[in-house]
Length: 145
Length: 203
Image (cartoon, rainbow over all chains, first blue to last red; front, side, top):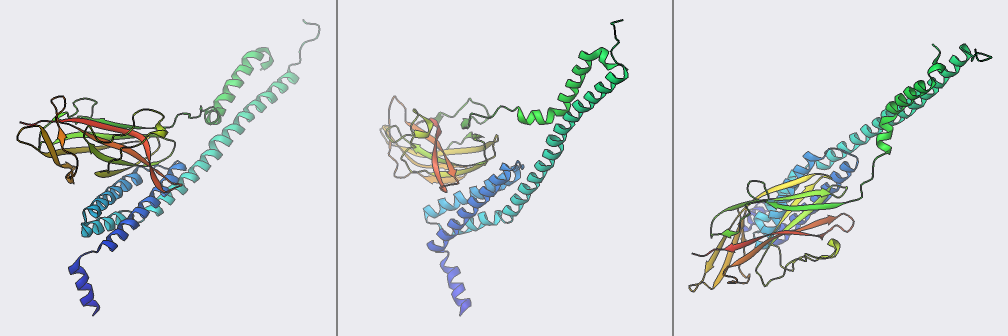
């Protein structure tokens, strides 16, 4: 019975409701992945590859919308499913890029900012100590001779 | 060595060394903040230059352009380009006034093109198009049937027929820029568009 119903569904093609639902889900997925990419870039990650994937998924979604408007529900459904498939694992990758960029920034802050700040203070302190030691070792002559 | 003999030189060298060591900190602190945030939108000709734009077009002949977006908004942006087509009597987007107050054309888009552009990044998209149109026997009116854009056939049935003005059958292919607002989760018009003026030649 289930096989017969499934076959009937295939013969009848994708309905408008399924097609619209698939396109809606694909749209939500694209939006969510964009937010993940935006967060990754906020953390200074290189998101070039992620955006190329999003561009492909976005184009498929546009074509799905167009097919929907034309009443070609089979194509709309297929394109929407393909768009979602393109974004499999996207947010995992985006989050990984965001986290590694955040870690790199923390390391950079610790080494470069804190390190160089402390280092420049140390340079001045050491120079001052050397100056004071030199003053003790070579006191200024009395009488001006 | 009595450094006190060379006091000025000594402290000058110390200052230079300290500045060199502090340069990573200073390069982060002494950065002029960005004050201008904007988006660029452009069309280039087939050879990637701002020249040789298609103008006199023939039915069925293919023409190529490049559509580009530059993002200087300070964040990764999600753009939507609405492709529209109008004649001289139909609605066009605003060209004047503050960008944030401009309105798009009221025409329905023929096609939407999405673009995801990183901050300080650029996006360029090649477009090829051709029109299918008919002219009446008296050559006083042109009816545009379809626009094929990157192998996607876009029906223009129902668009107003063209009328001859200035001895030309003028059409206007527009690319309006919209931007996704992550707070409202909707696209809003970004106040920018580019267009191609086309003379649909008849023989």
